[in-house]
Image 1 (spheres, helix red, strand yellow):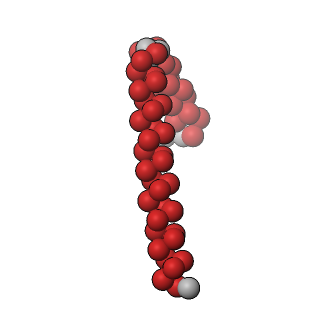
Image 2: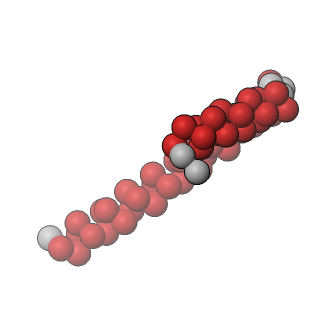
Length: 59
């Protein structure tokens, strides 16, 4: 399959997805944002703890 054919198929797939997708409700969007921020904060805290532990062990 050529590159141009693959790109054409990809564009058609995107069109199909966009036509089926619907805009999320405000409550759902807010919940998703809060969950994403919470997970990012947890990952950040874990990374900070690991970095601090390694720094203290190597120092």
